Image (cartoon, rainbow, N blue to C red):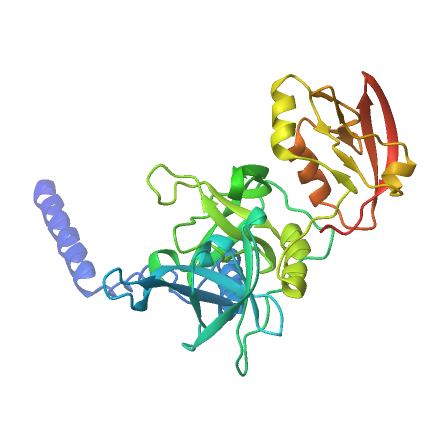
Length: 364
């Protein structure tokens, strides 16, 4: 009897459990997972990069060059494409800065603006020693020039930079990177080194030459000029002429068509100096002192020739305490200054050192 009652109770419990599950409220479905951020959701750094590019794009130009050729049989002249590069607006007068090697050997240059206009360009000035050149275009509603940092603001290794140019003809291309190193040196025109260059890992390829290197605020910090690459394409090592050099050279190119660095008022000769350096004499050998000049009044004596032998006079061995090993060192140190500045020149004569103060004069 008890067993039958227990079985009946168990059956009732199972039926109740079945009916409770059958008629219970259906649970609400789980909300769908959040979608990943869309294109409108940008990180602050991305937004800043986009803003810099949009603000600077119109000030960057594409440059194509042509050269005049003569048919050897008919003697008729014509033009053939020479190359391409980049540049940017320097001022409101339509001056465009680029690399000297972009327009080298060109008989004609055409500047293309971001709005699609193509304008004939006239060469205003060239400076092969810094690989810089200035063109000029004329037209209505030209883009604004790129902003520049305040004088004295320097770059730091690790600082973010952006390069805009036309690599391989792919117009208005943006690449980003950092300042990898400062004060680099590359061989330049005529064997004289280009010094003080910025090294960056922002991708720079053929066609980027002459384009701007910008800081994170969109200010011009350099002019892209060269790459170091066994293959000829970007290998993460690019170089740019710093804006301080550009700001020193470009105004002279606009005014006179050429760049003349300031001078100590002394005469030197590259070949003779190289020869005496090979003989173990460090420094820059003075070969000429203008009579009545500041250097003459300071007692600077040039080398002289006696009985077929060169007898050294004064040798410049330092400028403001920075050692001068050869003539290139001296020219690079003076080139960073401006006419009117005074410098302390350390001279060596017969093994004895002395210092004189000379004011830099306008170069010729």
